[in-house]
Image (tube, rainbow, N blue to C red; front, side, top):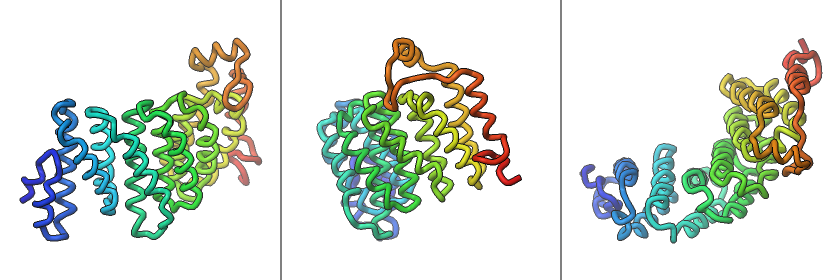
Length: 300
């Protein structure tokens, strides 16, 4: 029966004939096959069934998928729109947003919300600026959801904000400060994986928002030290250290366009752009090793 899962669209008739316990496995096998096929497909191959495919993939979000399944659904949706037509792209994005707008915060609805956030991230990462200005609403919905989300959802939202930042680049400059504020809070979250995701989000943001390593550099360095001080996870400390090191390194080797903007007296999202000197950068780094304050040696 499982060989019937190897089709471009989900064989719903075969799925219904299976016992309830085997249906998730059938769907998982179909998604694995679909992702392999879509990777080598061209537009003409999927033109006739794209609408049905989108509908079937979106419907899987409501089936409370586990992490592997939702990753496959997200990847398939993103690939489908990159290979095929994009006429259903914004409708699909809105459906994902609608899931997050739903007030149901019960544990049983959490997998659906996680799947929705994962799909949003995959589409922005893969399609980038093809998503248009829909990112404005999406980011605000994600940030609103973040306020009362439990740890799993906070992690996934941070990962998705990172992907939106990567996909949209400087085109999303008007939401960079909002993302920055949310990621700063995430950097001191009680859950270590959230801190790690927030650090990676800030690292990606620093590639597109110069104010992180100019006007906000000192504040962000101090926040990194506070986060390091209370981080109990090795992976989390490594992520924060990578962020801190990258910020300080960028001050000495900024992108050419940022350097030109500084030389012409330009401004960034956080105010007038100014790079610190090497001595100042090392001074900021050394504060982490001084006794007291927000250093590593506090209380020793």
